[in-house]
Image (cartoon, one colour):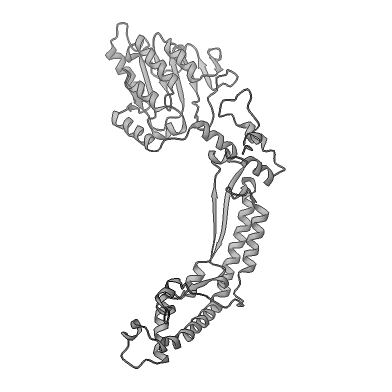
Amino acid sequence: MIDMMRFEHLSSEKANELISAAKERVIYIAPSLKKPVANGLVAAVQNLSPAQVLVIVDNNEHVYRMGYGDIEAMNRVFQSPITVQHKSGLRVGLLVVDNRAWSFTPTALYIEQETQSDQTPNAIRIDRIFDLKKKLDGVLPDPFDSTVLPVGATDSDAKNELASIADHINASPVQEQDLKNVQQSLEQAPPLPFNVCRQVQVFQPYIQYVQISLTGCAINRKRINIPGKIQNIGSSSLLQERLNTTVDLIDKNSKLSSKSIEESLKNIRDTYTQSLGDPWGRVVLRSKKHLLEEKLSELEQKIKEFKGRVRNELETELKRSFDEIINYYAPIIMNDPPAAFKVQIIQEINLETAKKYVSTVLEKTFPKADSLISDMKLQVQYRDVTYETLNQNKFAKALQKAYPIINWEKPFNEFQALPQTTQQASFLDKTDKS
């Protein structure tokens, strides 16, 4: 049996040549069809009956997004006399041409470029496949074996046997509407060019953008706007348009300081991430990302403890600030009561009623301790590198400056997605043009 098998490379171009030259039969089972294979199948059906050609694919948009096939190639074969069958989840490849067969691994162009060399085998060729079938009877029915189809069998007989193979793996004919639905999805959200995807994938194991921000903790620097109903009293209309009074939420000398947390965050940023400058921001090495996340987890715990520690003190500070604003504006309002105040009371205007009015207006905008504490958050966002970023001027130089010990030529030299030119420049030189 070994003498009937050999390892070799089966590319789409080679499959095209084999299929085009078929004299007896073609069976092609794979996730999808690339253009050379489609060309071969259309050529083969000119010499063979459609009953002698079996094609089974996975008609799914994800298959095309992974680069297993081309929707135009699929449409071409679908519009030919060949009946294309569908098998969901199909990811292996089988090609049978006359009395030879190839079991092969289909190439997903999203991951790697299809090679053309016999030095990179991706298939096992089996010669005299139907002699082998006799030893493995029942594994794969042969619709063209004379023991199955007698001499003089009709196309109808062959079609029935083709159907038996499709039934063997629960395949069913591709419906025109299903194919249109897949094509429409690809048109609405086109896949990125596969060479672009592969170039980006070269760098994805190396770096990620990271943005770390601390919100709501610096309560000692918070300010609030004084509502217009009370801040504009006694001012002319022209002056009112220019007024935008704000006050410190709590005393600047308050002990409710987030300085230690902010210093911890700065230390984490400076130690575990590197800045590439504008417009890129900070990056982290993926291999060291776990160290960054450990430190961020510790900082999260610090923030939690800070919340618990300041809650009671914050209530006291807010009450003091609230009372100070009331005590400042109440006499002004009592001496020059606005119309909005006058229409809300029936008793005499005095200092107490003025304070009540200021308190009512101020309560609508004055924050509560619980809301301030709930706003204390550590926000971390990661983003992967993009093709546009990799091709921006001076990006590579910025990366090399941030991590001078790493050999950044290596990942770019590993990039094989785009055709190499005879005079391709070093990436570090190419991207440093102004």
